[in-house]
Amino acid sequence: MRIEKIELPFSTSGTSRSLQVMRFGRADARPKIYVQASLHADEIPGMLTAVRLCNRLAALEAEGKILGEIVVVPVANPIGLAQSIQGSAFGRFALADGTNFNRHFAELSLPAAERLRGRLTHDAAENRELIREALRASVQALRATDEISALRRELLRLAIDADVVLDLHCDSEAVTHLYTSTAHALRAAPLAAALGAKALLTAEVSGDHPFDEAVSRTWLELARIFSDYPIAHSCFATTVELRGDVDVSYALADHDTAAILYFATLEGAISMALPPAEPDAVFATPLAGVLPLSAPVAGIVVFECAVGDWIRRGEIVARLVDPISLDETALTSDIDGVLFARTRTRYAIAGQRLAKIAGRDPIRSGKLLSP
Image (cartoon, rainbow, N blue to C red; front, side, top):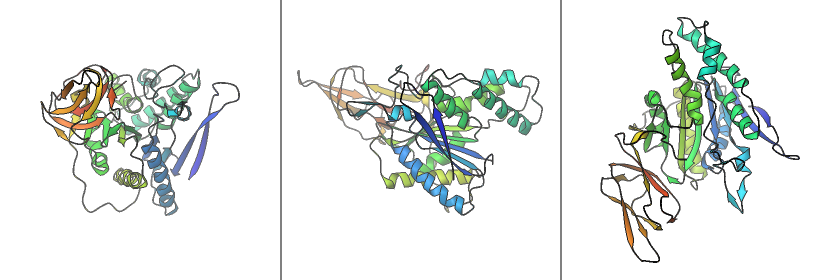
């Protein structure tokens, strides 16, 4: 195991933060798999999984079983990890400017395209290496004007030339679910199945350029720009939501670690015996088919369905109880689908999002991710 420490520019006098990067296998070996946890810094399940993963990888490396390079960043957001408001963690949004830490990563296809003009060939393997070189140079050229932009740049630098990128997150109360590009649904399926995911949500553009799209969609855009040249989609990236934010245990982390190692073995990065039978497949559904359920009125939230339940159109998912008028308002689903996430909040104000149901048919457009 090789440990790299990346210093971030300090935001105010007398303070400093850094990223710690754990590298396994031979530098520059292929395939390269990049795993990061807790970009939303108050989402802890992935952080523990990353720790357990590092322990397993260190043992596998000692046995000579790592064939590629595996890079792990257990704490991808030291800025957000330090944010606390009167004892409550606040790691999704930056206190400095209110932005979501997993939005607005740099769009690299255009600067990379400028570096590639006149250089591409009719050899797909050669083009892949030229594109990786252009992407690395484009990331290096990004200006970091503050601590947050420096964090985004360094995370991109670590992942931009990877074959596989796993961004570990969690929801409020949820079953395991994944987000990935529509083009990568089949590649994501074995990982989703091994994790025991209940939903695999796909979109070409989800909105506001989150981390996984910043590293993978660039290849799709470059293939469009240079349509006369063979360009493979050479970076598979997915956001992995590891259940809810209090689902933190060694048993769950070890389960998720085993699933990641299984997937890394399928990808050729690890030499390890695979289980005799593959886990059941997970059916991919469009992110545009997700129904967000919001509170039409304020009230006490009483859920009548659990995460992971299959919901029928017209079924009551929750009731809102007004403690003043004593009225009850039923919240029903407009679609059939899996209730894959819900809030831990048990009192809601009007308009607050309470749950998400994954349906099979598109029902939305525009920005598809939660704020």
